[in-house]
Amino acid sequence: MTALLSVRDVEIDFGGIRALQGISFDVQRGEICGLIGPNGAGKTSLFNAISRVYPVDRGSIHFDGRDITALPANRIIALGIARTLQNVGLFSTLSVKDNVLLGAHHRVRPGFIKAILGRGLAGTVADPEAEACALLHDLGLGEVRDHLAGGLPFGTLKRIELARALISHPRFLMLDEPANGLSHGEVDELADVILQVRKRYDLTVLIVEHHMRMLMRISDHVVVLENGLKIADGAPAEVKADAKVAAAYLGSAA
Amino acid sequence: MNVVIKPRPPLAARVIFAAVLAVLFLYVIPFAIPNYLVSQLATVLVFAIAIIGINLVTGYGGAITLGHAAFVALGSYTTAILVVSYGWNPYATIPVAAGLSWLAGWCLGFPALRLQGLYLAMGTLVLSITVPALLKRFDGFTGGVQGLNVGNPESPVKWLDDSQWIYFVCLAVAAILYFVAARILSGPLRRAMVTARDNHLVAAVLGVDRAPLATATFAMSSLYAGVAGSLYAMIVGFVSPDTFNVMLSLSLFVGAVVGGITSIGGAIVGAMFIQFVPTWASDIDVSLGGLVFGVALIVTLVILPSGIGGLVGRLYDRACVRLGWTEAAQDERDERQTAGSIQNEPA
Image (tube, rainbow over all chains, first blue to last red; front, top):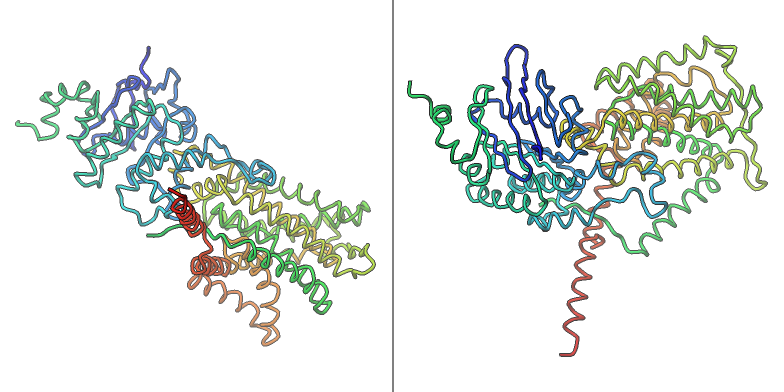
């Protein structure tokens, strides 16, 4: 069986600055792949290229055998690719449940005619409300279901965003710095949550993360970037032992 | 913590509220006030329809439009030309006006919504400036500066005079369009619109395709303006190019802001404002009319950004909390009752 995600020779230029230089790697089905590297290494660029938010200048990205290199960002979620955002893209004026239900947009496909005629007098389009409530409950968010998202603690918002990604029924979950801004205890909890949801929903996961310890703990496979180049790719233990990786993180001796 | 308040007044309160509204709109306005006011209130309903259109495109679409008068003109002239030149029944022209303005909105919305923010405001402003000139230029069709004499539709009911009759026609159309807007702005479509309006990146990530959504919103908002125009032609009985000038676009926009840009219930308040306040102000001093608009717009934006509709909504929510008329309070009562009945069961 081929890899679920296959990135080949991807390059991105930002007006003369080459953010990514010929990156290639695969993510196998069912694995958790960690993407790490120092600041400015190109992790977020690569992440955004895969989720089609950034255009790719050269190279190709295949998902489940399908070329998605030129697909617009809003078509990605329907293929089963859900992502979170680094600074949490939740809407503070909507309730937690409504924020989660937003993740089901591509399943519900609301339009004007559907909304107006809908299900007759019974209401407009059917929402997967029960599913949203169950997901919130599973992630320990049942209590805040009817709260406005604005004003909730950051760790809670991260979980809400995870619930929003999960309700889209993804096969491939992309997490952009999920541990960013969390306390030590919260990071450990988050790692457990990620492992749990991977198992329960049969997911393949790609994580961009600064938090080395967590990433090494949960990843099956780690890709290391530095200055837009891939410098290591392998099991966490191998990568940890790699001299180039140590140099990138600690500064080279020379 | 900010819990979302979901008001759920008891059935009796809802029945009383509906009865008050019914008495007000079905008896007091048409039968208990002076006749000249009845047709003014019919105009208020028409403005309210147009303002709901602005609520859709500006409040939820996030696009500032100053070109609404152009679509009102399209609706008005569709009705006028069909009635005057082709002898149509005036009511039969309402769906035609609706369809044509929807189509025009769709065609214009397609390129226009690719313009962002201020540029769209300018583009639509140009539209409002152009339309009266166009109407004058094609005078063979539109009657030019003289306008077209549509005439007021006669009341088919013996015990209703013409202005009462047209009031009821406007009320029926406004009620239907209000419920249509309420359905558009509920559930998943509302959330998708809020997403597309507030965060383009998240919208894309969640699979919300902004362009067709924005175009459909613009088209729907034009439909509202067109229907308003069609009814307006029947109330006034006469259409002329200079009725649909930039000032009409601006007053509708001011009405939408004063009523609450995201509040379709507030549309009626905004419509009352633009119908009555400038006239009252002009009675005091001729130059006061325009000033009142400007001041009202600024005061609303500074003190009540969510408009009068938003304020009433907040007060209503608060009252419901105080009275225990919320979903959460109801659930709590249900729970207590269930708990009580379990305890009462014989051991």
